[in-house]
Image (tube, rainbow, N blue to C red; front, side):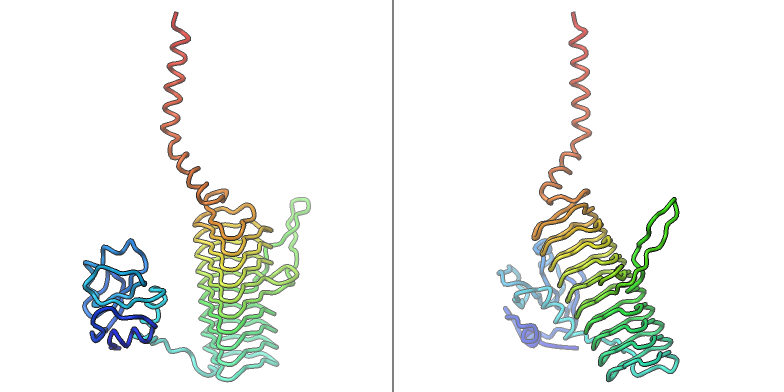
Length: 342
């Protein structure tokens, strides 16, 4: 789709600096952009690429830039670029429509208006679907599960019994919601299963990536707060509570009964023990091992996780250990030689 720079600026709420009449035919990253593309600049480390990019125009922040290219100034370049992508390259994905004849629907199932069920979807008894829910092929919805309006469920998703899903939720392929929590009591070397009779609640506007496992609570509810986004290959154990607008990045593991606050970021491969709290706005860095509660608003990293500045100092000291070891060995040698001297 073709748009002038001025039309794009009006759509994304930006201000044009330069020729607003140029025609934009595509979108691309600053390195990959070609003639006719618009790109964006949200990170200062890419500033040198402004001189070499083939893009015709740039979406940037409010700060002045030294470039001959036309610019659209915005409050948030990343968000504005996402809006430009939606404008210039509308989605060509065609979701299922209607009820496929191979779908299996149990007793007393309530389906809202314009619900779409793909091939071989299975819905057990007493489930309730809001208006506009879309379920792709091969997904399973357990008995008494509730799914809110305009939720999108991709192929091969399993949602077990009595789970509550909010409105406008997106769930990607391979995800399992409501699997049993990992609970056993060991008696004389034998592991006896503890029944997991709770449920899971996914609140509105949550997106859950591919191959995520969210366990049902032992007694109460595992909760994913409104607006939170969960990346691929994440495990969330029983009775975990995640606050609103939290980001959980790939391969994170959260142990049982841990509470995550609002607006938290858990970076890739972070691991959290059970029965702790991560405060609102905290950031847990990639591969951090969190063994105790994290106060609100701080960054922690390392293993065991500690405030990031402290973790960096510790790591810097560790890097110096070979040199320190050599120096200590030399001092020891000199000390022994001086002791032997007459």
